[in-house]
Image 1 (cartoon, helix red, strand yellow):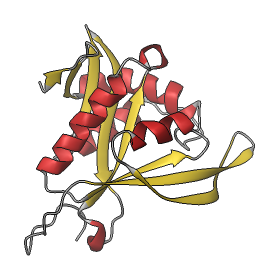
Image 2 (cartoon, rainbow, N blue to C red):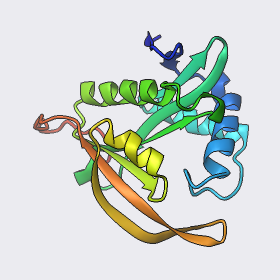
Image 3 (cartoon, one colour):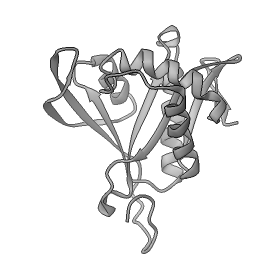
Image 4 (cartoon, rainbow, N blue to C red):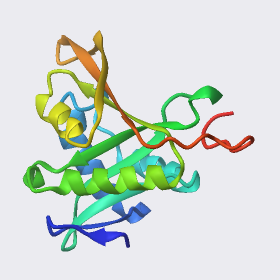
Amino acid sequence: MRGVYDCSVLIRPATLADAPAVTAIYNAEGVATTASYDLEPVSVAERERYIAEHLDAGLPFYVAEDATTVVGYACYGGFRVKPGYRYSVEHSVYVASSHRGRGVGRALLSELIATARAAGLHVMVAVIDAANSSSVAFHAGFGFEAAGIWPEICWKFGAWHDVAVMTLKLGDAVPEPGNVIFGG
């Protein structure tokens, strides 16, 4: 268990038992919107594999639990597979619509950033639908800075979508020789 936040949720490491709740949140908040560019709902088995891949690789995957219900989740993975990117990660944060605006996303992203800093990572990347001003503002509140727009890079719901890329510098540590976090 990690911690209880002022929004009255418990942030804890995910288990495979969380896959049904994570799947429901992702399909409602990601697939049914432009928060993600998956076009079809994912299955519980697919989300189980996704969670297992993170856990098996030693990557963080957190859930936010309100009493006994998972109401959000956050994780990160490598940004790109080439070894030069091994100190950068791309993250995901999803919160059930019933719990948005209550600090759940802040609690999840705070935990993820702290974990990434402790791991000696250098940059966290956010890839966001550029029209989602709430998500852009949310990330800016954590110190993420605009790194650019990828114009019309995604097609969903019968339209092209621009993607905003934002980055957060996590620290100034210089990598030790031979210390590979991702890729390589």
